[in-house]
Image (cartoon, rainbow, N blue to C red; front, side, top):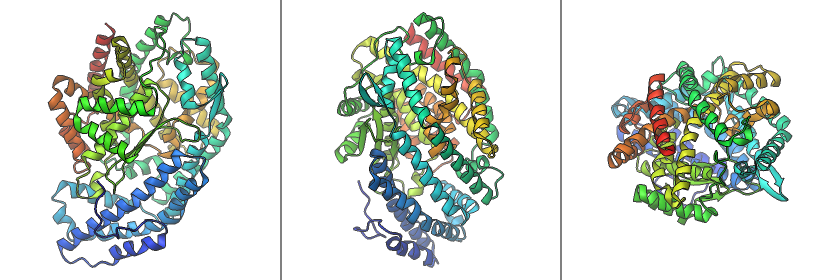
Length: 568
């Protein structure tokens, strides 16, 4: 599926800035006198961007797959410190060249180009030469988070485990084991608390400077613009927080009270939140990465055969790294590869239901990449996260119809679906907590570590169901924000999951009502990439871009009804 090059030599590889420079210089020096020449420039730039972005992608992928390999880390750092800073001024120069062209108005009649040019103009407004070295430094610092957390391990029952593997013990029916695992994991996190605090302080300082250089009062406002949030405001985020607090948190309280009663405990503890409420043994949906992949392909085949074909393509190319191991960065991601046209899935599977959720989630992102692959320009595929996360979160829900490939036992299948839907409900308050915390951090950039901890506890309390007894573990709670990699690596990229969860629920509801029509809407939405504004992309998916309390209430009433059907 690798696209054929027309502008860049077929055997060219990104190794040094000096070898890359002539391609950027060619575009910058080119005279444009006709619409055809202008379109040719845009296509050549798209090809150049694809080659460069894929090279960076592979450096990042290889580094996260093996954080202990210094050579791979150096390769990534070389790009962000030696190549990217040299590209940045040319990007600004080329953006200005494009924006100043008389042919912009001609192409802007096509909404895809209008959105593209809107993003270019926004980038011009934000660009400052002084921020180039700061951005490189921030990327280097952010990478350290993965190195630190990827090196974390604990010993349980004589076995050395990653934190992801150790978390499986939180599902144990032995409460003593759960307590020990919970304390072991969180005490291990505390060992790096000081180092991660210092790292974050450095990032906050740099980010505030970047915002100030670009003329913004704070980094929150800067990022709202930098993330291209053209279709909603900062105040809309606060309204969404309020809707979650008023609509979703009460549902979380009901779930936790039900759990407490089912377990028969006088106090529900934080290490009681992952175990089966009827104290049944943990679900084991697969044995290893190979089994996970094979079952995922069967699952996707049942939803749409083309989805399964896409997973097979990725598997045949070796574009999957699924299992957890020491020295591997935490988390999971789907990384689009602009030139290959085939994405890469990275995750840390340890044999749990959560891993199935992660696999279908990242698989949803992968289907998005495949469905939007034929779009003309690379920029048309740079989908806003509010839409990208609909692709993944909707797949989590849509795929439940075929989860019997993971759970042959009917009771296990029902358990898995209940856990999934309760997870959907529990996720929204955490999203609001992380987003509200970041609003506080960056509108109070001079805060101390102690003030940050106080703010975190206060904000977390606002979205807490109030059932779980946290008093004995205040030190763990005070530190719990550090486990969210987005706060370090991709600041402010989090509320998108909340907006997308609403879209995902609406897509799922459509599929349950009419599978063919619902899936057609889902695929149509994804195939459009970023050629329409967010509300219109949602509309193409036959859903609404709406996060009012009324709409949140409507969708979560539907989820609650489906959950009660499973529990009946």
